[in-house]
Length: 462
Ligand code: HEC
Ligand code: HEC
Image 1 (cartoon, rainbow, N blue to C red):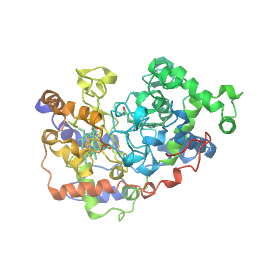
Image 2 (cartoon, helix red, strand yellow):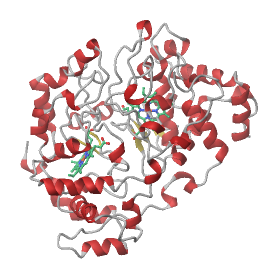
Image 3 (cartoon, rainbow, N blue to C red):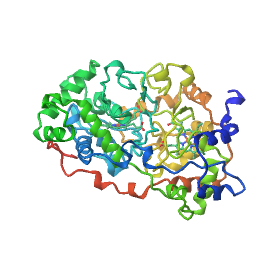
Image 4 (cartoon, rainbow, N blue to C red):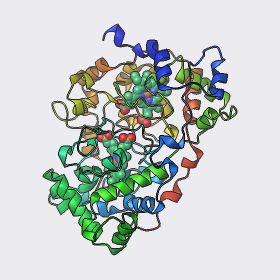
């Protein structure tokens, strides 16, 4: 690896910070007076950062909430969005890799299913949290950004559905919501099990969306709700999955805005909002250790793709000789330069959204942070016991295939952009204190987001 690629970010840091952030706030200037001065901290968030500016038709949000929890949207009517993004698991599932349709139970207690209905494989990537994705700066969804805002497309978005993605999607969150229902392992089910699964297996996304819309049209309570929220609908027949996706997006954006953490309060001028340790950690993060060269701005992401030598576990995304690899961003751009690059994750609420990494390789926050200090050593030393996966022999057998292969491990190491850094235990503790200060207390208990029932009458949990 050429020297210039290693930690090139450190050299750029002052420039990066200047460009991503506008003049420091009063609180930030205080910090900047310290010896290891931070050039500047991001500005605090404001309503204008978000779609709807904090306002949104509450009936649309409520409809979105019901849809988000309704298993009606899965082929076999056994999985909802909430299965993998549950409020009781901090909008994730607490697992390294999700157990999609066929599994039973919630969060870390979820099993891999029984008999004919047991899952065929794990979902190959970690289910990311859904906090603050209603902020307009999030223009790319998924670990590889395969759904992204692109005004040159007729739909306004680039996505795996290409020209088939409908127009009239409100935003990129709505565009994203079109896809989980088309995935066999996540929600649709296996070919032969139901009509939605058959349509998904033949890549007929339009039919998947139409079949699901038919299910919604057949439930009078949903029809009434859609009419209320979308008064322009001429008839029940006109209810489409696009309407459902727009409502789901409204719910996600409004329910899971999380910008009142101690860090936010500090940015808004409350100097006492952060502990001393968190302040020291913030200085390291936005200063000398250079986390913010990638985890930039107020949401700690540059929205770009980087290779940090995250160990590869799980069934893989179908890349490489046996499909067990995940080439990350290369899958979208088809450029070998992008191999093993994944989107820089935002770090809001990061202390409560484990396991961490695109495949949930690490089940402790400290381990994933320490990985950044000596990535190649961490990669070499990695053991799958650091992940959190419900056991089943045949699934376990494929989980470590990619990682156990020396050649693949060195390819991941070779692509790594991070260079080794010596960071003391005390400094690591400070960084962790800062990461904990990114937790919005209102996100700690999300029970309020779980509906008591859904219009299909399907159970919310088994
Ligand atoms: C079986 C588990 C599962 C189900 C069910 C599921 N998701 Fe996800 N979700 C994931 C995984 C895994 C990813 C990341 C996939 C990737 O990056 O390739 C993801 C990604 C996302 C993202 C992108 C987050 C980001 O930061 O890029 C959003 C938003 C989301 N899901 C919302 C939904 C909605 C809405 C539904 C229901 C229509 C849903 N999910 C159903 C597992 C699931
Ligand atoms: C070169 C860019 C880069 C730098 C510098 C960097 N990170 Fe990361 N970080 C990433 C990427 C990319 C990922 C996701 C990698 C993956 O999933 O394969 C990540 C993942 C993480 C995660 C896991 C988040 C999650 O939700 O899974 C944490 C925590 C984290 N980084 C903290 C830090 C800290 C603290 C620093 C500074 C010590 C830092 N990062 C420096 C790019 C970077």
